[in-house]
Length: 236
Length: 286
Image (cartoon, rainbow over all chains, first blue to last red):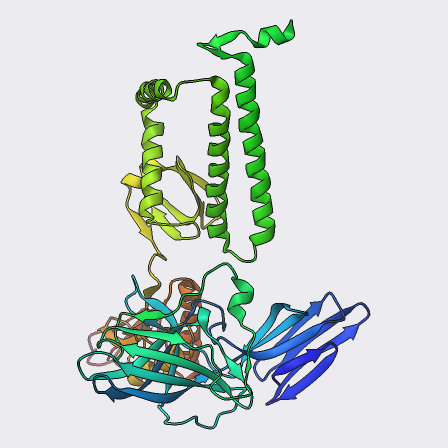
């Protein structure tokens, strides 16, 4: 389903149908998914539609720009580094436009969203909550439902540390897609309370394409914050 | 002749011509500020949130007008040192003459600096409850929940207790749900927890809490504590309450009306008489 389509078109996968039908000088966008259907009238009959995975913080409505991974605890000794893989839910974005100028038309997902709070209600962050297992290598996934975060964790502290949480600022999130959907991230742990996370601008595998993002099309003037400082703990 | 009249000194060395030049300069600055504001709104409205946009436009407009006044000042041919002395004295006079205005102005500056609230926040200030529309230097505009425009002087806000319902990113709300004594409280708790788990905006952490709180006259009262993002808490609150009611109904768990069981003394000859007073369910505490 992911790719670039020229209006008119129809694509089907996993029980989802996305189409744009031309009617006179205008066209109609229609998305039929298992739980809901969306129809939008477009004021043009030509152009391109891009469908790709987007930052998973848009549904059911945007309340945050942070994503939090809760995973099986991983213990690290001082100055050690490991690479783990975590699954995350995919949200699919449909953009319409031409040349380099695209606008978001629709976002949908087959995953059930859940949100959480990282930190305190006064100074913390609302986060998209992702609970997952830890994999040593990329697990098999359905790219329409799940993606894989390749997370390199480094313990720069002097003590052993148990890590079970990683929070990322999605304004800098780069999602890549091909056979799978993937993100590369880094986490540097300084103590049980403080860590720094950043998303890498590198595809985890060769041949993957970078997804068009929701955030830049909405807020070009907000500077990307990178990295993110986790100050409320890296464990339970 | 008309030109000569423009040269007449009105205040000290300041002529009518100087005043006209000054007025035109300030007017031009105001027009430029307005044009710039319109341009910014047109070009950046989809890239900057509306509240930040308003603030940005105000700052830019103020800067343009200040520059306009600064450029117009030389037309007065005024010594800036003298002006500072005169301005200071005038300032004191004006301050004493208009204490309330100055007080409101000072309070406005403190409010802008301290930021206990910002446009868009849902607040309660004294007897006024609503959404902050605009924070001006002298007053703050509140739109009440009924959509009524209320202008509150900043001095009053500064000395009032301000409750900001959305200052924190998350907030807690609660329900008390009474179920009948015959209903299985453990099952009801399971049903409610499952609903809470399914709702995206019922936060995973801090986790919601559901427990038997009190054994009251007519019902076993369950207490439900829910944390939700402040931006959507009200919609979550209204959605969840009805969802809980429907789910409990569907599982046969009764939410009883208040009731009282009255037992009369047994008559030796006649049958015992007892009755339930109330409008609803037949179940009460045994």
